[in-house]
Length: 138
Image (tube, rainbow, N blue to C red; front, side, top):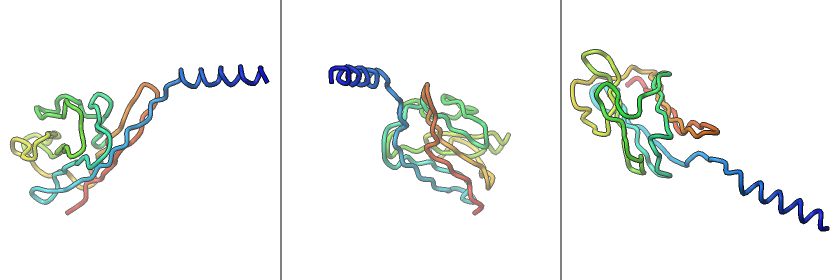
């Protein structure tokens, strides 16, 4: 009986010392808008706020820089429920434009149908896909 108690106490102690990161719960939605309905709004519906330092946004296999994409702004503060991020292409050079404002500040054009957008959460121990979307032909 004493041995079982000691083993139980040691097991509880080890469990409490092992802190495992778990992915945040976040629900996203998208809206295609603008000319030809090919610009994309990624909308954080509900769930946990996301620290931009812990997420990656992948567009067609390319990870976006969290702080700047071709002069556009990617959120630097937590991405909370009701926040949006907008995606389009620069009309002049075809580079990706990302911003927290819907007007995207300049000459933009449609994303190609089939463009894949993913939101990945990363921790020291694991990663998890929070959202995936493929731009539709409209």
